[in-house]
Amino acid sequence: MTAFRYQALSASGQEDQGVVHADSAKAARQWLRQQGLTPLEVKSIDAQSPSGQPRARRRVFSLAERGMLTRQLAGLINAGLPLERALAALSDEARKTTHIDILNRIRSEVQSGSALATALAQHPKDFPSEFCAVVAAAEQSGQLGHVLDRLANEMEAAEQLKGKLLGAALYPMIVTGVAIVMVIFLMAYVVPQVASVFAAREQALPWLTRALLAMSQGVQSHGWAAAIAMGLGIGFFMLLYRKPDWRTRIDAWLLRTPLFGPLLLDYHNARLAATLSLLSGAGLPILKAIKAASETVTNHGLKRDVDLAHDLVREGASLAAALDAQTHCARWLIVFARLGEQTGQLSEMLGRAAQQSADRVQRKALALATWLEPLLILLMGLMVLAIVMSILLPIMELNSFATV
Image (cartoon, rainbow, N blue to C red; front, side, top):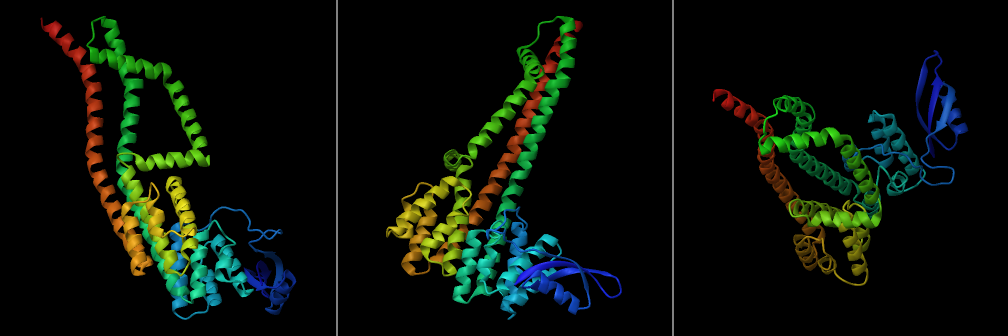
């Protein structure tokens, strides 16, 4: 059955609109007439194009909204509600038209006999391949509600970790931005006015003042050229970063940087461990779990290692041995994977490793932000002090001459 969005008039002349599921538009109009409505417009909201392929469109559900949807669906299924009725309830509760459309499309596919994972796969931008793989494994195991609940927990944990990292980095970023804007303002507008006073008196200036005036002249003379060059450089870097080979190299280099490298390495390995734990716990074979988990890794340096590990496992190696042969797989991940394989509790061990690593990433990020904040404030104060002293030194010399 297909979902149709309709607009119709009631017997009293009031306009009504909604969604009806029918085999065709003709059947939908017939159903509306049976309800005492006069159809004005009946339009299919099928997700597929005429060629049968999913339509390319923007993402509708954010990560938080997808997590909430998964949590609600898990609750309804665990309460004993059939899948089709659970989807209908979610559609009735949705407020955004785009959400209602997608839920109705999924419901239509399920009513037609498709599996939930197949229906979700028609919307790859909202339900990525690893999400559909977990749902498919859950449907096969008969534990759809339980697995969906765990999947919701994983998405909420990922969102919380991302939010805490962004929160820890927000203050240093604001301080840095304010410092840059303030220095540019002083160099471009304040210092030139002071320089004109010094030039009129024709006195010998201290080296700090001369250096400041030279920098100010450079900002005035070549500021726009420097800004354009910087913009072109950023654009060239972004263009280079879109190329897979260069993106892999840059991402791998980021994991090796002295300050932020260990933090990024733990963060991406934690997300990898959590995804592998979820997929293997849902009953997915280890090869399919590794392949699906690779699609969730946003750092292409680590993604390349995961793909290489997948090839080694396919050739007969254990997961721990395959990860150990790679460059950017954290040591703790390898240890927990080996323990999980030895004890037959791979999913539980990987989940424990992901949780411990996520806690460690949060502590590292907070510690890094804690000492970065005073350091940035100190650097900003030193820059302001240097500018102020370069202006005050000639004035103090003038006062000393006047006193003599």
